[in-house]
Length: 94
Length: 251
Image (spheres, rainbow over the protein chains, first blue to last red):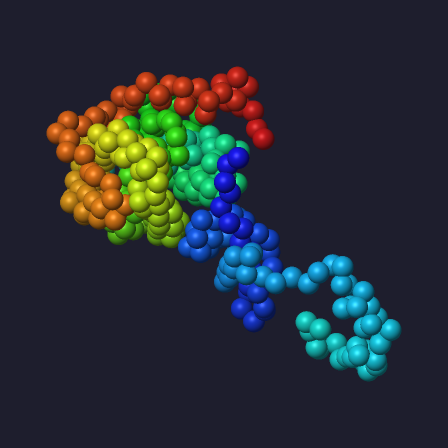
């Protein structure tokens, strides 16, 4: 079987002031190629002003089997959301 | 300065972009992998965009209902003024990259001079294209190094391509009658002066890629005069098929 290049995760900042967001993944032989490929695959319609790439193997992911103990306890604690006061219209990005 | 000289001069620049773009677009869906496939077709689209700017200008100069499409699709083989290099077939990825590299280095040097042209439109197109072409050169040089300094197989393939395509590089620096005419009028670029810098850049990158520049005394020419290699007819039959089969069709 043909050996694939390693997988990379791509994060793009779409404009200054916003955070980098996960855009997708791609294959590349090294970090330089990963950046160039990311530029061609994910920013060709001028989606970005900055790119981060990280090899997928460096990402530690939570195990879906543990979702119960990790996430469910938060579901019945509505008081942890800042929803008990009204936001002025002028406040954006909330 | 005659209008016809200027039109021919524009073809001399724009046809290279059209034909190289056509060659690259043949890779659409056929690239070595998804990422390089998209990269190559991106470059093809950049080149096509540049071609359109030039052809729109040439069409405007030609007057009388001539459109950019007429120029792109309805000329005969001998009326295309692209160099032989850009019409050479894809063969394998090593050839695609080498052809691109040989053209990109020239293209960037050309545009850097063309932006100083007295012709405002040509100068503006050159300025707009420089960023795109800088990226093309970065992409192709990078791949030359990867393939050259890669595995035994990749090195052999790209060295073969370098050996084979080298004979088409000298033509880039030949001055046609239209070139000379435009040069006298402050519009054109003296491409013969780009030669030294060109081979300097090429040789530096080949060296970094551990590739050997061929020692060649004999070069091919003709494209600039409309005398093309055997591949051009096939390329044009693909390129022109729709307009020839369904005249005046629109998307």
